[in-house]
Amino acid sequence: MTTKGTAVRTHDEPPTPAEGGPAEHGTPTNGSRTARSGAPGGLGITLSLDAGRPLPELTAAVTGACDRAEEREDRTVVIVRLPGVPAAARSWPGPEPVDIQQINRWERAVRRMERLPALSIAVAVGACGGPALDLLLVTDYRIGAPDFRLLVPVNDGHFWPGMAVHRLSQQLGAARARQIVLWGDDIDASRAQELGLIDRIETETDDAVHTASVLMGRISDRELAIRRQLLLEAQTLEYDDAVGAHLAACDRELRRLTGPEAGREAGGTG
Image (cartoon, rainbow, N blue to C red):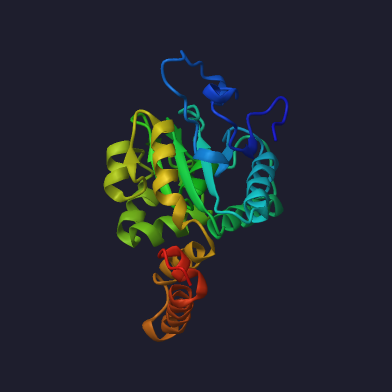
C-alpha cells in the first residue's frame, strides 16, 4: 500500500526489477546484476518508514504491516527499512504537536511488531533515531549500512523517555544503557555492532537482507515468537517464575519433534 505524497508504505515484497517489478525506492538497475530488494519468493512484507512523517502516519504504517503479517498462514519475514533522517532531526516525537494518546497508540503498535509470529529484519541507513530507533530495537535481525549512526532522541538535552529506554536497558544492561540515555552520545556502526544493537554492517544491504531471509526465514513461525518472549522475560523474571513457561515451550517442542509431521520432514514414509 503506497500513500501518495508520503514515504511511509507497507506492502508485500514486489518482484525484483529483473522479474518485471519496479526497483525498490526507485533505484535504477543496469541489467548486469539482479536487484534483490528483500525476501525471496514472496516471503517478505516490507515496511519502509520515513521517520520524519507525522506520528499518526507512522503508527498506521506499523499497524498495517502487522495486520498483513498476522493474516498470512505461510512463514513470513517482515523487512523494516529505515532510511536515514537529517542529523538535525534529533527531537522526538518531532515538531508537530502530539498528545499522550497518540504516543500510547505508537507504543502499542511497536509492541505488536515486537510480538509478531514472524521473523523481522531491520535495514538501517544513515542516521537512525526517534521512531526508527524504536523499531530497530524490536526486530530480530539488524543490518546497518557503513554510514549507520544511532541518533539518540533528545529534547533540550533530555533523552525521550519512551519504551526505547526500557529496551536499551533490557538489551544492553543498565550500565551501558545509562551511558546512552544520560549522556546522549551518538553511536556509529562499529560501536553499535560491538554493543549488539546491530548484527551486521553491510554495504550491499539488499543482498544482506536476501541472504538473511533465506537462511533465517525457516524459523519464522509462532514458535519464534515464544522463544523471543522467553528471552525478554529472562531479564526480569526469577528462575521459579520463569520455569513454567520454559517447560511449556519444551513440551510443545517435544510434541512437534515426535508428531506426525516429524517423520515426513525427516524423509520418513509413515
